Length: 158
Image (cartoon, rainbow, N blue to C red; front, side, top):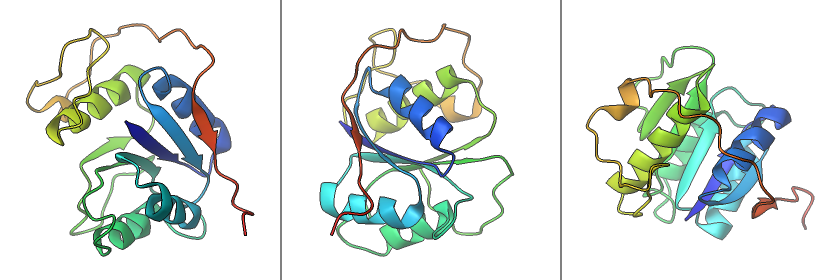
């Protein structure tokens, strides 16, 4: 499963990509415009995006994705330090920063399962707990970071 992680805070983007790379193929982008271009070209199975970014916010990215027949089906998880106040936002899930990595992993697994991606959670069992996005997960410990299939997108590509 291909996951696009989008955040203008590069250190957070790197951390999220490394954590998810144990279970998913990950591509990173550091702003919404680049993320939209990647989504059109690579057709990721899921997008995890910060809300507040330069050039194109996460909400603007989501609206652009939903308005395009090629990308309207891609599940999007939005991340923000502030409560989301946009009406009509069609995100698959929303997490308020700061959040526990384990909670993100559970939400990603649940969204993947709900959209038929067949993702498994850390325990190796399919996640089917209703309402998991609104509950804190019990601490499971951070996964061991190993060399991983993280792709870097060159925004200077012609």
